[in-house]
Amino acid sequence: MLIASIAIYYFSANFRRNDFYNLLRSRAVSVAKLVLDSYEYNANLILRSGTGYPAKLPDEKFIILNYHNDTLFTSDRYWELKEMDAIVGQVKSNKEVFGKQDEYEVLGTSHTTGAYPFVVIGAAIDKDGLLHLKKLRIILVAVCLISLISFFIAGWFYSGRALKPISDVVKKVEEISITSLNLRVPEGNGVDEIGRLARTFNRMLERMETSFAMQKNFIANASHELRTPLTSINGQLEVLMMKDRSTDEYKSALGSVLEDIKSLIDLSNRLLLIARTSAEGPANYSNKIRIDEILWQTREEMKRFHASYHINISLDNSLTDSEQMIVAGDEHLLKTAVTNIIENACKYSHDHTVDIKFRRADKWVEMVFDDRGIGISEEDIKKIFEPFYRGTNAISIPGIGIGLSLVNQIVKNHNGTINISSKVGKGTRITLLIPAIT
Ligand code: ADP
Image (tube, protein in one colour):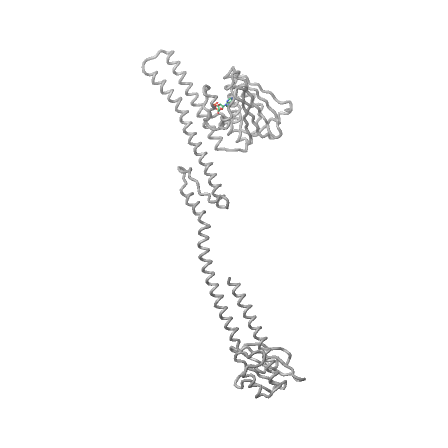
């Protein structure tokens, strides 16, 4: 606004000056003609009467000289023109002179009548022009001030409105704590940047809420699973100590207590493993592991404890070199994963049989575990990797529901993938893909 106002004022002032000099020039030339064509007395009369064209200018004064510097005419003998010699000199060397002396605009120009050149000097006050300029100055200053005040008020108002959604989000975020993760920040129109930011924030809160809920569940389930064998041990020992028992009774009770202790140890081992693998996340393992060896070893170990289990391993014909079966990983973790899958396949099928196919698929080592067991419903498959989740098919079969979540975590840590497809009553297929080294 300020720059525009200055430009407007500057061009208007220029325009006024040029315009006035044009008028003054025309007027000076017409006065020169009048004077040089008539007697001085007549000329003064005519001048005073204001006739002629262009019309009389405010406070106009004229001096006419010949080129010998003799003053031929002066409209006001009391007028003291400053620097007259310099003006006359310049006009004689063919230059027009413009300038300001006090409030007078002064113009010096040459005029030729017959064959004789004359110097004509005119001066007048541009009362109207200066008045207009003054009014323009006042208007521009007023407009600038009013605009400044309105911009300030509008800026204050609109920036407050524009930033309100952000301050709303900030206020809401400050209210959110671990115990109030269900709160959400206002999404506004949900379209602009703030809306998108709020939506992203809400999605993050959703994820946090879910993982907090999962953690709470995990702790509740873990304590429950730990308490069950402990309560059973406690009960058995209390009953045992009520009276004296025979050696056989002691032996059988202690055997049962031992079973409970073993399952407690197994559970705490698994819980520790889940905690460790989740904390580690996907890792860069440096150990080279031959997956086929893991499978063979697992098979031997499992057959020692479960003679009824049938574990059939077949290698794909494409596997010609043992190097093709090497992955980078943690031997203990990989063995745990494979053991859990094989154990489930045998546990959840009447023939206790699992067929394992082992092959190389592009950059992956692929293991497919097939059983002809009870199968898993689609609903259960969606939740099967959640810790302590047990399928509806598993109610009468012992287990605690952390095997597959452990497998899933181990596979993730090895940057691999796990896929489950199943048909209830027909069987289950679990496919593991682990990136190969070569
Ligand atoms: P658990 O076997 O101790 O219950 P898991 O985490 O190993 O726990 O398995 C979770 C659930 O997945 C099981 O309760 C069962 O419902 C289902 N499941 C896993 N593997 C199989 C399988 N091969 N056949 C049928 N159901 C299975």
